[in-house]
Length: 185
Image 1 (cartoon, one colour):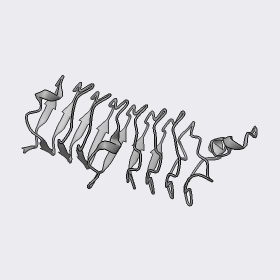
Image 2: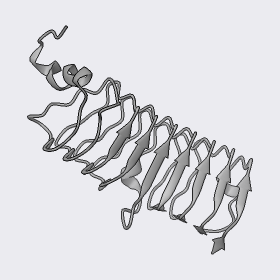
Image 3: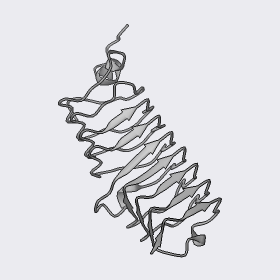
Image 4: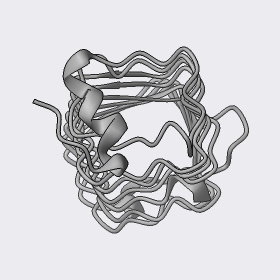
């Protein structure tokens, strides 16, 4: 087990010599297409890192924060779901998938979520502050009490998702009514 260490400017996952990291910080690391399978991260932070197209089969992310990082094309549904707890700030998560995950109370702040798959995801009480959802997929998603008030470009069908208590801005109404093909001015 590796604890309380700061890693900076790593260029490959192979530079990680352990399969369990606790209370560690990874800064300016480039793990593009890296294989994180079966590695555990507990109370860790990734700052200004690139994990695009990384493989996360059975990877444990327990109270993990990502800041100013690229996480493009990641299939988070392959992660170990036990105690999964993720927080994203100023991140690019385009073309990633959270299919069927429990992300209750998760926080996404100022994130690009283009074409992200949230199908059947539990996003109860999730907070999406200043996020951009171009072509994101919401199908049978639990969005109860989720906060989208400052987010843009979402297309969410209330008849195909659970939205009771969810918060949206008046400017976002078009994203809730798009499937009716009506014009809002």
